[in-house]
Amino acid sequence: MFFLRELPTRKMIGGITHALPGFDPDAVLLRLDDLRRASLRLRRIEAFLAGHGLSQTQFLVIMVIVREPERATLTPGEIAERLDVSRPVLSKALATMERSGLIARNPDKADARRAGIAPTDAGRARFDALLPGYFEALMADGPQVPRPRT
Image (cartoon, rainbow, N blue to C red; front, side):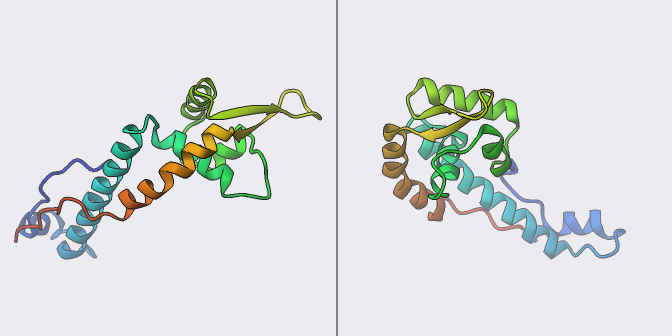
């Protein structure tokens, strides 16, 4: 998350970057504006999902499985490779999702230590029902970010 409500002024950035070769204050402000907008968008998505009882991680777990229709399951390691979360965070999300009936662990017949993760019918139905709202939150412009002062 990016927590600045108001971006620094061009003059302020110029005062900091003047001794740093290759740093254009306008380019720095543009990137800060990008970060602020992305942070607001992410907050809208998280609020939408939280309103439906899911974390972003839980929603994305199902997303990374269903986006590979040739696979019925993914291992926790494969899911971790596809998400930008730590393994402990993923483990906690998977445990919560399993308790909630959103996913099932399917033991690997060849290796009892491994299990494939698959959405349950209820998990897939919930994902499908939330996907339109997720995309609406993703595409919404939402509150405008204050423009940098000069």
